[in-house]
Image (cartoon, rainbow, N blue to C red; front, side, top):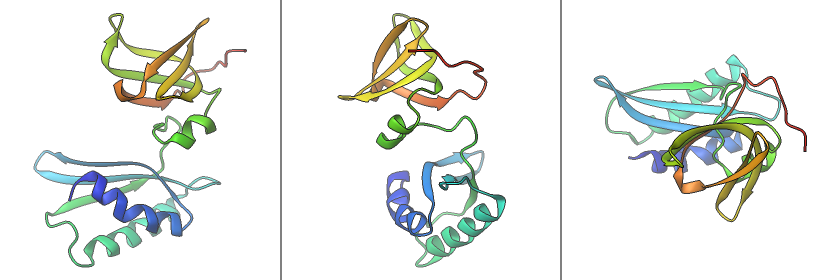
Length: 155
């Protein structure tokens, strides 16, 4: 089972329980496989919520032995520097400081910091100082809220 299949299996369960699957990582770390889920809820996620979702997810995955290899399950909040991936997140976090890392450099640069302006026609717009730059979504390696930014640029 790959990450997309795991996400398709777990997303309905998490949403039914009032949560949101912000990110999912399925990778080999050392000699072990790790399934890492980053969850959120409208009013934030607590440690008790993480334990509850961990139990529910474990039961779902163990039912019918959905993942054949042994793995470690980690459930946590997305944190202050949460990843921005989903279409609705681009609207939700517009106006917030972000850090962006590209797969391929743009004019020799792969990392940018600025204020998220939004997503339109497959391009992510970020205000970098006085310029608004647009990046092809498929070239974005990672986009996160910048919890270290103590500024918000004015329009």
